[in-house]
Image (cartoon, rainbow, N blue to C red; front, side, top):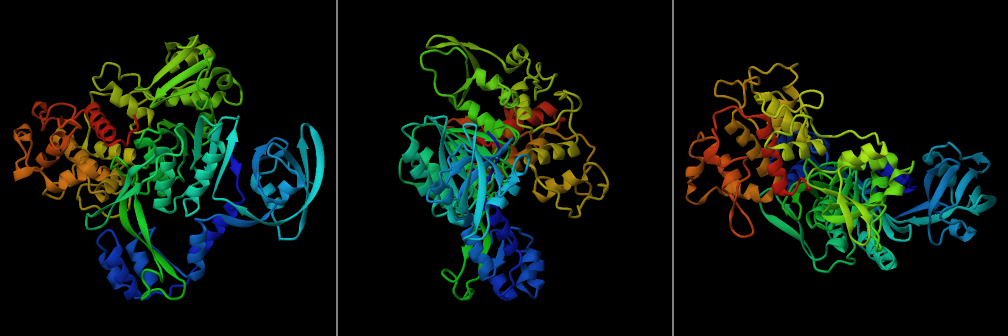
Length: 637
């Protein structure tokens, strides 16, 4: 698997330029009126002090709320549709001798000239393509409509040269292909009105041959939420698949009524640019257990925007201009948020190795003989061909795959026959085959009662150690260290705002973490105006901070925190906690029930067995964070 070059990326870059260049036609008063009507949060006081719409939006400080002039608005709408570009109609991958054609589009000059997927273009208009960047060769192939381009290509070792006339070619935002005769592979760069149709067509074309599906969302920045939900239903089927909450606490739901189009499992590829609606798609596959999410953590955009124009707000927009306003927070099928934290993949893999790991996991079920196969039990059963995994092109990806396997997953090696399997560990395999394997866990957690929690968080990069390979489970935490732990795990950003604490130095190592935690509403200071960053954090302080976090991450916990217990009685179990901590101890230990109606305690022990004023240990903080993330489904194991 190689990185792919798509000619539509130039159009996206143009769109970004246009989006920031539009003149303001909206007045400041009109902008404020629309924000008061639709915006999800209270407006900052500075918004009301502006005399231009541009100033209003700048004072708002929300990068997702924008006003577009007519040209920019049309470009924004077009970015969620198939694109028409001028060229020869091919999709290329890097190759040592030039570029490899991975797709030749229908009704294109390339198809008419006889080019096929698998051909290698070695020269364009006499310029050698060997060693050139994909973007450079792509620019050579594009040009003005009606002009000609001459390419030299290799097929089965034989060189041929052809000349084609460039013309407009429709480049779909979603494309489907069949790899190795059994892997249906979707490339999806946005979610729009055509996306569902592309997926349905791809499944219809390849479902008879495909036994595994891959959906690549690494360059998908979002689009229409409903299109994302309906498309995810291609694999997940019918049901309530996502939720929205507005600024007044009212909920809406996205429903798919049709059954799944295929019953085969899917691997979703994610990266740091997987955002918004594409995060909803990934979370649906994760929550409905329809397959695996593989790659890097996603962007973490947990809010949705409403589009306003002449159709729904004619009194404000009459010249083709429009506006998008952050109006909702969205939640996954399980009611979990993605804001800041993003979607955490089942297998956390570097961007470089993500496609290769997905391909390795897509080996077909054994046909009567398990020899030469590995089996990974992680939701579904995933099979890996050992010969392919150990070959030079895939060896590094296979090593990272082994490093990424969470402690709760099971790994098996085939011993032959129809059902011959033996348990094996990543460490054993790595030593046997001489792989450059590095464990993501810690060397000192084995004796901890919370080893599973700590090592799982470490596998997903959610906790740091205190030194080389050490976690120091029994060590205490300071108040500042707790802020750092939570902020790093959640990826909260330092907003640079002044803190109201008199004892926090601007240049201290912990100040950015305190600012981020304070902006997120997780921490408070003491009555005397101090924060006391170096003071030990007590267990009830730990529970309070992570209780506030849990209410932000989960729709169900948020509702419980808003309503509290019936009659306002926190209960005897949390009576040993101070008044300010009691609601959060109740939230995490008493507010939730399981499917059978029994209670759910997310704390590391029964609340009555916790000495709330004593110093919290690092392992207790890890156990509580793991419990919250696992219960909400944010941690996908």
